Image (cartoon, rainbow, N blue to C red; front, side, top):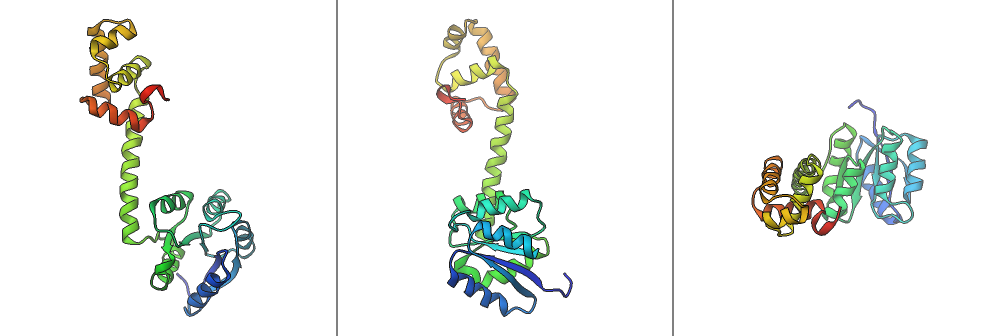
Length: 221
């Protein structure tokens, strides 16, 4: 970073919160608050007018919320980086914010200790999340990666193999599958073995869990 101050826009729908943030940031010699906004639409306008380094964005503002505003900034290819500041630390809020393009996430209850560090980290191009949040994200992305791999494997199946997969998940035996698909039990078993090889599964429980994850159990697509 150069000696220039980090230019910040505050976006929160509570005046008292913005005042507190301005006071906190104003004590730092390397940070300058250049504008404030009370909702997502106003935040977008302030960012466009002032071209800050960082916009501190509340998630649950009235009107356009912080996630939508963040997604719009990304769509506009804005160089301004978004730091989410919110009272919510649950995964249901954290993941959508980062998926939308936020570069950092700070819970308001820890702002006094984390906010300045987060602003500086985000301004220099890093990502900032607390260790607890990082663990949540790591697990979520691990699950997502596994689900994506499973879905890709399922999509690689032929239509007949998909039918066999679904029937096995629904509890049908090889002979019953043959009867339903008008093929021999031996042919049905051949399809079963192909599915096992392609998806890396074998037990009926594996079929059920995967079918539920893919949303194809019970005839759903």
